[in-house]
Length: 242
Image 1 (cartoon, rainbow, N blue to C red):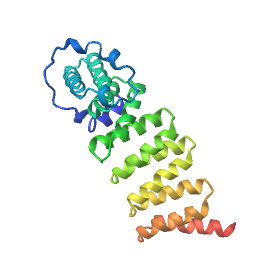
Image 2 (image 1 turned 60 degrees about the vertical axis):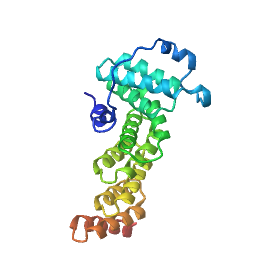
Image 3 (image 1 turned 45 degrees about the vertical axis):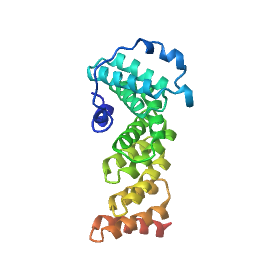
Image 4 (image 1 turned 120 degrees about the vertical axis):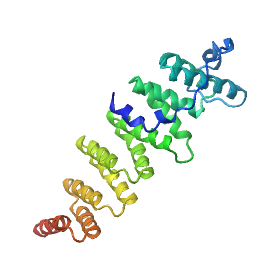
């Protein structure tokens, strides 16, 4: 199963709601036509919260039964009735991801994230997932904002930081890799290896004085480390020779 699904297993997939039995309702058969394009914001009388939650429950039931195309149809009906129904956005995105239909999942995740006012496990999962999807699609200018938010909300997740930074740096976008490590040093100020990794990219970019300051910060975090002291000494000598 793709890496995205493994990432979601602890987040969006785990957050699917308990499901009820399927109810029959002929009045909802043409709900998409009644409410029109899903991208249009609707307010007031154009929103039908009761109908939206009914369609959500039906979508959840179909999803539990692994009848995914039917689940998609019901979730879409729910969003036609209420485009801001967060559970429908999340669960529909989750089904699309499970079916490897990433392009359809991405705008749903983006809308879900935009609606969140507080931190939660599902928001973190959505940020990490959408950042990864956008990076994999090469949409770095979009991905970076989601990545930096994910780092701030999960300060103890070192591995995601290195994956993000390496992806940007290997693609030739060093500025974004630097932004990733700078954010990581803000949320983990005592992490010497983050400072070292930031310094390495700065040095590669010829920003030697910034790199030296960053290596010194790493050495200060671990004063007994010959490794970090050596980085400082080597770069100081290099600068003296210039």
